[in-house]
Image (cartoon, rainbow, N blue to C red):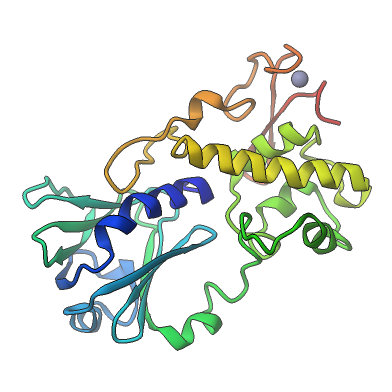
Length: 274
Ligand SMILES: [Zn+2]
């Protein structure tokens, strides 16, 4: 699933191409991808709108339009937004086509069909049900080390589960939670209440460093992630633990262990992570 670094990379590839472009019309090939309003109204409302801003909140992409509307996209497991030339091949997973005024197309493509699109008035953004419960973005400048520590205070449960909880901090999924905890040398099943102030400081810096390095490498492509131009990322080559069961820890050489935890795999080094 695209996590913060992948969604940020998609944003960075699409922003220069989409800003100032007008959506001339839209073709919805799978109605249920559009949650709000209904597909017919969606196509009517978005036609003629110009893109004036592209932002990210956690794993959500927010496309600001003239007419005080915001297009909210969540790619979930396998969603893609592809900026392509006309004639680019479509398949049964091409669900929405945005026709732009420069002749190019923006395709929403999703093999698993869990991705969602909403078109809402800009003044509803703050109260919109999918966004209003999200915690601060993991790279939000206002999320300082002190704010991070304060938010974690009083949280019980395993630290990895808390990192994955989008109401705590938004943007981190399974791959980066595994990598961040390895970098911070914290066991994924460690109770949050047992973490010392030093642990929390290391965790905060590991979170920032792992996410920013992953953005520098244009995200992680394990199965199907590609950016807005259809290019894969390269951070998978730098993964220390995720997907590396029985392979040596880059730090100590001991074997990486995988444990199933709540339907997801935790990968960690039992020697480095306590
Ligand atoms: Zn190790």
